[in-house]
Length: 299
Ligand code: SF4
Ligand code: SF4
Image (cartoon, rainbow, N blue to C red; front, side, top):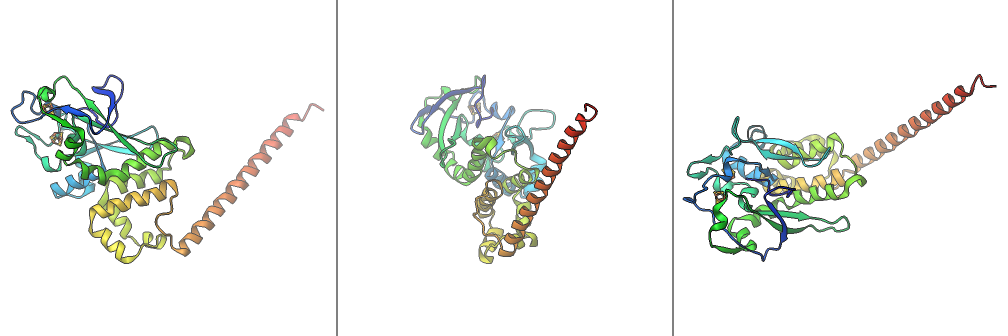
């Protein structure tokens, strides 16, 4: 199964964008000649909501899920990270593939649900909303395209349960798009903000510990009742994680800071700026001295 989110040259993704009203002819069903062919050779990126569903299904923590079933990758050079399914040891097949089909079918990830459609979310630099359009993936081995079952992409999304999956991962997509479209004006995210992005998006159980910690309460003024709800509900916590990251990565003040912490933070920023200015002045003085020193002996 090819990577459905990012069409690239020579990929089986037909590079024509289509709308939700576009009709495809497709059916995938047990007994078809190519059964499991797509799951035998995977390159599947996962969304944060995919992780939530699968770790719950498997009865393990998000930390265990990440370690056992995923590999990280860079979505862009020096940028934020994504995660992909880790295939079977020494092979390319999905670890959930069984002769009778997908072993986690009702919790299968977004990319598996979309196939053979690819979701293309876009956001222009001067726009605040992201827009979805779609592309069709046609791979030679997939016989599903030969079945005469016309269906609009909108209905296909409904049939595959994608409305919920897309809605609950929207905050993550917006962060990724905003980071990609803002480019050098935001600059390379610091190691700390990249680590926070990874934890908050993919490792929800560690993020829960982070939000529960005293250091978080010292910095953020989050009402107790709101916090109690978040800590009990993975989905609510994930939506909060996206809100938190908008603040960390783009300075959107969506979570109130404690007055004392805000003061401390301001003082630290001012102190850092002062140190930087002093360093810069020292450097300039040193350069000027070297220049003067270089002139000696010519008099
Ligand atoms: S999760 Fe299921 S549908 Fe997706 S690649 Fe694995 S076996 Fe196939
Ligand atoms: S029809 Fe396509 S999606 Fe279905 S099993 Fe065959 S290759 Fe996979």
